[in-house]
Image (tube, rainbow, N blue to C red; front, side):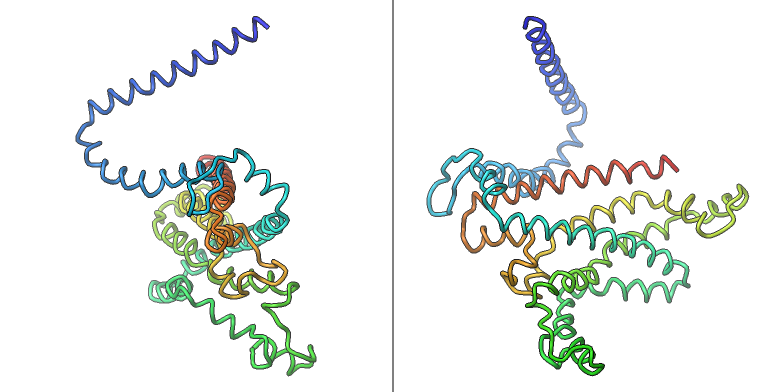
Length: 321
């Protein structure tokens, strides 16, 4: 017992000492670099107000019952217990979100990398045209609406028309209303629109590689394009791969607008329910802001954890190669 108390006291003193040393360092650094901190102050002020402060407010609200008409009432861990133990729709949303992210995230990331690698081999004019072509869905914003024409539920939709013509189906399929088709079709539509951002980052990274590295690699024994890709190209664009991975995973987890526009809200049998649409339901429709903040905090924690994992494994790519 005495040794445990001594250990805890030592840990507390060590932590206190480290915090004290940090503030001493910060004070001395502020004194030595007044001009730099003065120039950074406007950015940090805006960043704190619009980014850091809302996170702390959401964490506080997640422990309250708040309906926007009455002051928040402290409920402790009630919202978290309700979310994980008494909300069956949230469990469906978690399942749909991870299926959606696991399929669209890696597929979009690998497809963007391979397409960028191949497009980079073309001459400048053709490369510029193809880059614009692949990035166009991101620029247009609402371009995913064309999929409502392709997968329209009547006989005039391109998918139904083709299948009816060839006798594969006898009556039109309700692609966006039938739960068995909703998620596969939604994945195809969102995957098509998510290629642009990572693709543009990869193209930028490929354009910045020093060509003399390939000449040096040929002297050192690299004999084919796959060896060039693995030993030279990928390590050189490691920062762009990290950015592309974070953006792809983030977009996969936060996809909501496209899903709502395509399959409606709520979707049939919650087939396209994701964590973000569950958050919008409680925040924008039911105005249970405390519960909505709990969902947002859980999503935030999941995103932070995934980004740490991505940085841990992809951040070492350049050093390991």
